[in-house]
Length: 377
Ligand SMILES: Cc1ncc(COP(=O)(O)O)c(C=O)c1O
Image (cartoon, rainbow, N blue to C red; front, side, top):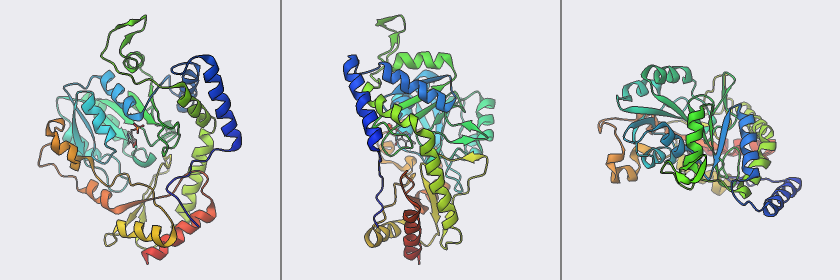
């Protein structure tokens, strides 16, 4: 057997539907920001249960637009160090400075205790990143900290399409949420992002920022310094196709995770991430911790070379606070140089992500687990 990092599966029927959608676009005369983008946005709003959904050309763009709309320029934004570089980079591009927090080493999510310590008078927003598709079990506490301090809660939900906590959807938990449709993500449109918000003022500002800061009533009147963050009709065709099967994709990811849950029971030298029953992960990643004496790179190498099992990328192996870019531009980070991130550093070294993409069969999951057991022993 061979288990690749990712399989993108489109049935013949889906390919035909996509081809028909592309034909519609070509015949419509609108290659960008037309009916297909509107249809994708409408479908995503319905999926998330949000008032406004706004498509952009990437998850990084959608984050930056939200940060600009909230007004982080000249202010600080607190976020976990354990995230993808796009999260802090969006803050810097929006004119803000980043303050990194540690994470909870049990679930990889932002540590609320450290968040309390890191908030400052000039903090405008907290960015909560649903790492691996898990919404922090400490969400209520994090929200309360934000509310008490008058700080906007922004979700980086790039991993978390369809994830919930107490039945509430990722993307609806703060002032605005940002999603990505990069090919490895839960829902895919080749490239793309989505902003979700119930706040009309943020929505209107985001609409303007996405297209060069145009005024709503006069496209040649520019009221913001925006950018070209528009979304193309061709990408929207792919997005619409994914929305049609979004629930199926989530159900399949959760079914695969359920297989791992059972089959990894009692396996020595590993520990599964504990997700409480009020949190439903999107299972962007199925995360497992390795015992302290086990080297991740050795396990990955042996799995690949001996058993042709490729593990997916970690979330994350290189914490943001230690990225060379921030050493090069130290003014972009507002942490105290004495700050430490012990839990983040543990997570960075000690977790692996097992293949979880739709289409993976139960015998393949058996094979991954058996190969892992052999390599561990
Ligand atoms: C946590 C996180 N935030 C933001 C992004 C940025 O998304 P995109 O690649 O669509 O710009 C990613 C993408 O990998 C991500 O993983």
